[in-house]
Length: 54
Image (cartoon, rainbow, N blue to C red; front, side, top):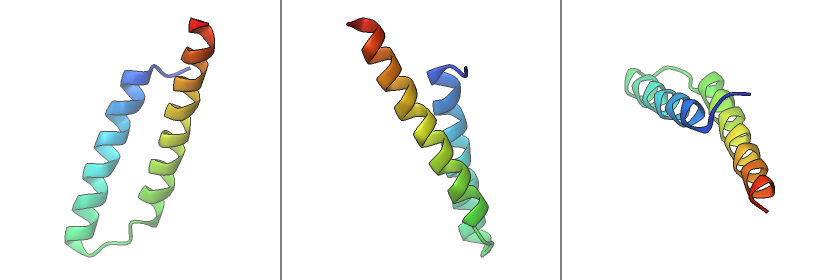
């Protein structure tokens, strides 16, 4: 599984890509989907870490 920091880095890069797409007037739908997937993976990773701590 990807580490939390890798997922956070990927999310940051995708958000920068989305900003660039918006400035260029490009469609951001594919980037939005990727951002949602990474956010979901991060939430899952956080929940898994919480279960392991208990």
